[in-house]
Length: 124
Image (tube, rainbow, N blue to C red; front, side, top):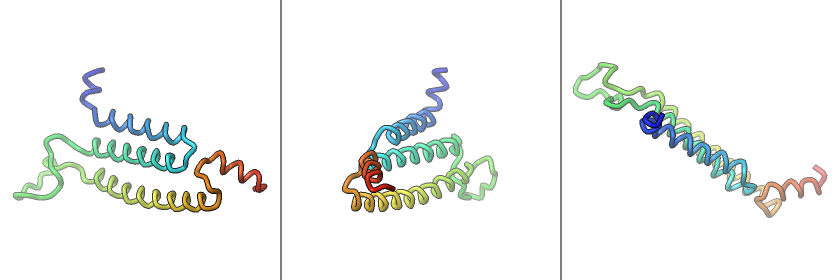
């Protein structure tokens, strides 16, 4: 068991990061801290995909010196998925932060419990 854990340190690090982000998302009431937790979870998923896509001894799929054997290169799809995910993650983070700014402007707090209490007072 221990040797597998050490051999898969990247996947273990991704799982720990995901757990930290998920715990942050669940336990904090502050919206900014929740956004940070979601970003940590995103990063953990990207790390996991990058770890799964890498094959020891192979290089990036760029033909050099005429080598066209598929066994010489890694699979480019996980890297493409990670890049696409990063772009989507940045867009979602920007949207969440802009909505958080609007919420703060209206309720003067970033605490979800206080926002919920103010919404109940307003009758919504």
